[in-house]
Length: 184
Image (cartoon, rainbow, N blue to C red; front, side, top):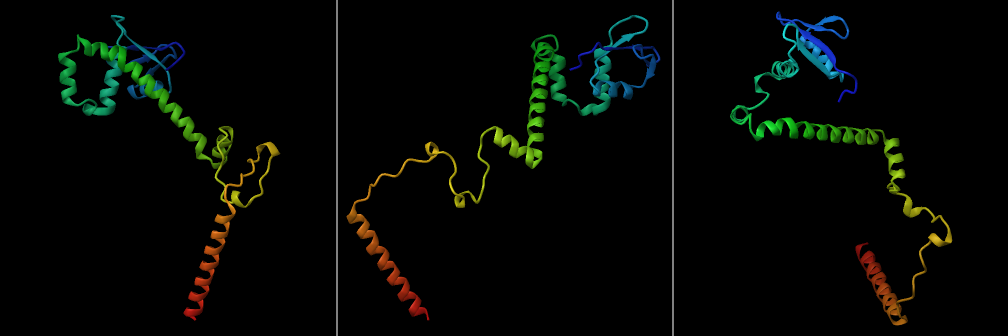
């Protein structure tokens, strides 16, 4: 949302808009650009001094997005309930929801920018202390201090199991040799 004072716009009976802050006439499209650039505007009727800001902003929305901005059933409900809870919904909840949505969208955009360039992605990963996938890590010698190395594996196999495994390995080697000599 804009932080500076709103730009004061005077609306004349001939529908012309005058930017009193910058002393110039505006078209509706120029007013839209001011708003898109982050400026808040305040539209005042030239004769009655009535605040027309909301009606002009609604006019911009309807003209910009056309008649299909809101579905007809929604508009019917809005007209039927405009004085009840629905009015509170639009004045209280919708602005908060929109602010939350825009904050989330901005946050996601910033995160996506971080990952759009590979070096930034790697820097961000390093900052999060997440190891980057390295396909050659298994072939590199371990580095670090002795305290970082894993403890030595305890001997859990008994000699009988070792002998049995050796015999099975020898048997498999003999079978493979037989298969190779039979295939020739």
